[in-house]
Image (cartoon, rainbow over all chains, first blue to last red):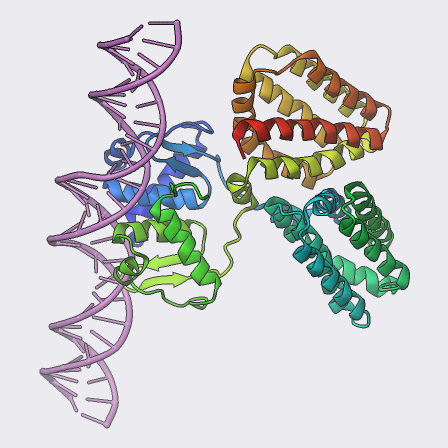
Length: 227
Length: 227
DNA sequence: TCTCTTCTGCTTGTCTGAGGAGTTGTGCTA
DNA sequence: TAGCACAACTCCTCAGACAAGCAGAAGAGA
């Protein structure tokens, strides 16, 4: 027995539009009929259509441009990419991080402002302090790498980096617990050299150092997690 | 100097609300002020406030219940990373693509199976054929690069690559239209050399070639789109 | 005093009509 | 043919009106 449907018309209209989009009635990038056409077609008022469109725009399915029309920007906006990360192999995540962070280190070397360099050095110091406690050390390490990526001044790289860290945190803590080797002098030395390369504005060296460090991490992890 | 703000008021209002939510002005599950209160507070009409709320509702941040009010359902708008891409500077997107694709090319050189190599060569051939029509050429080019990334056998890199392409497609078509130089022999030669490096299992050369190609693309685009 | 009902005020939901602003194609002009 | 003005779209914003729903206050009955 269906309850009385108390769903707002705007929600129903949005759902209806999404269905028609999914069914392929309008291809990707194509223009939807105008609001004034759509309204009577859906049997609702113009403002209701507008609210439905806004709702889908918030989900990234539609985008409206004044004067020209409403366009399909995605056939569906499912499965945030973080879901992919969560499901993927740890090794795959680290490889992606190598890609992101290597390039970010190079860009940071080119662009870092004095203020950003100070922030990186501060993060490095913090990382050196927190050697005793496991989780704290991992977080400080992440904070350091984050400061490097931030200096690259590219919002996309930063966003991607932030997407990786949650998945990596657990794996790294686990690895450090079993291996026990963390925060040793050689490790700290490698990070310090990276900071130097960024300070010297040497993109290629920064990239190489960053890659080498993460590659080593990947190999260690590969041994720990088995497969 | 900031361009004239051509952002719709509803978008601005949504952004403003999101900021206030993130700042903790309203706790999770708390009720927002009424639309009629919010409207003069934001300096816009009530329908505009409603559209802003709808937009955030579509992103899962707010939920409105008739008769009782609008409530905060999530403090963190996950902001699907594709939304970040859509909003970002083209140059930033290409930089991210350099990061992804450079590494993917290197991995592809290490891991490619004979079948994947065949697929890459086939895509290269297709790319060479489609020189006359603009959009078709861009799509064939994307297809070629996609085949390289696929050979890296890393689902995350593939996912990220797919996230970039829609945003880049329009920009590249636009660039080629204004510049006109596309599909020339030098361009094709560069791609052919990349395939060779992958065939020879030479990761470093593959990475360097891939980077160089995209870097050149970035510089061209920088000139076209103005800033 | 307690409980149930009713009512009142506030909230969001929906529609309409009116302009404003931006885009795009058409047709005229030089 | 190239350039420009214009008209016909489009979405954007506002204001006002009324409906629908919720929640707490006020009142009636026990």
